[in-house]
Length: 344
Image (cartoon, rainbow, N blue to C red; front, side, top):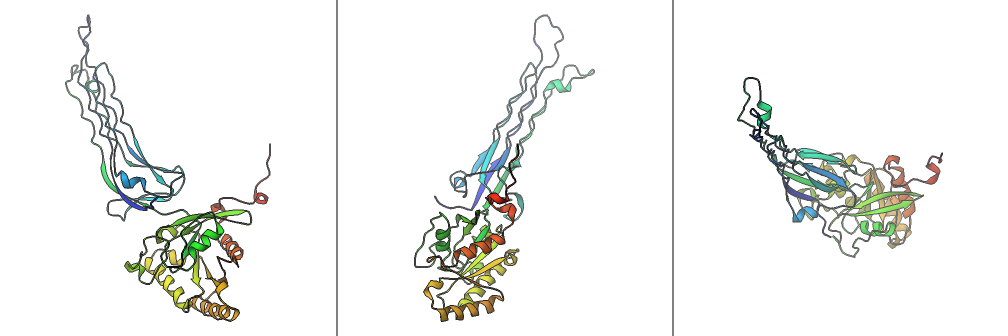
């Protein structure tokens, strides 16, 4: 299935039905009076966050969503039928933007959350509403209200607890495959990851979601490589896992490259808690480990962990450190010891 995280849609709510001009035509009733019914309300357009979706690929094949119009009123005080609503079912974490791609209309971050994008037009009044003591036979009615037509953008930001960062071929996909049931593409060349992947990771009877995005390179904020198109998927993460390729001769420069791109991206992404890890240490001897660990600690000004996703060395310690940076209310599953005892 193709991953799609940005798309344009065209929506239009239904117009209201027109009111009816009608009079009672019954035998033996000389002064029947008006009995025109009101028009029905037009259908509205809604957006709802549903479960089971992690891409906007459905909107690749259908971009136009038009709600039904309300039916006009009829005689004998019959109101026209309301138009059916249309619901755009989107993944959790979808932002709805105006046509300028800057104004955020809604941010659907919870399952079942709904928002009205375009309200249907009200139905017009029939001539029954205009009857009065001085106008007992009105021959006027109101037309239905027009619908609302809008052009909107849908932008998906995946909901995850941990975001993976690093240069291409830093071992992000290998880490995700080793710690979860996700099966991202893994190869010995850069840019094997072309779209984000999600995996559920478990440690110490708790589970959390990890997001793997394509690697960043120098100048990504200016559009080089895949650019910073996918950085939005780690904006909602509680903690970032920054992986550094231990086999690189310039680990300090590799670290600064990613930090520079995070700062250029803007927002509070560069201020999020980060866990820096020297990866692929299974390919280094003790002297090389100590040397590159020292260089990396000087560059980041804080502690650095060592890990090998292939060999499994240090993976559990890294997962436990990530768990400590995630708020309890974000965890998918808690240990049975933390749960409240059952009471009848």
